Amino acid sequence: MQNYGTLDSSYKAAGEETGVRKLVDEFYQQMETLEQGQHIRAMHKDDLNVIKDKLSLFLMSWLGGPSKCGEKYGGISIPMVHQHLVIGEEERDAWLFCMSEALKNQDYDDNFKQYLIEQLAFPAERIRQVSQMAHS
Image: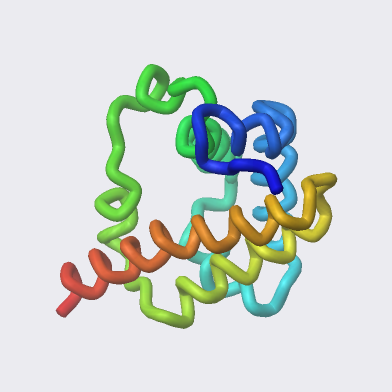
């Protein structure tokens, strides 16, 4: 089994920049088309170009690739960027569901798909926690 999470191994397993951007495009497509994604899609602006770019750049760095997000958009804290939104378990789970469905359409190794969704659950939960604190 590949040693994901070490250096740039996850970034490479995701297909580097091209693969990450393909995943992000598919993720937002799932959000637009799946009933489970409608509520969280409504939290976004109509034009998804900037948010797709931000998520792509964030994921590239998070996966061990180049840190272009900070260069282009400045330092960001993913939980704090989302704190203005009311995000509970339903929204967290919908986000993860859409990402899981998007992963099914990627040419990634099945072990990497499983690894990635498990790892994404951590920031998704942290976003939910920060949102709950901000809105309690």
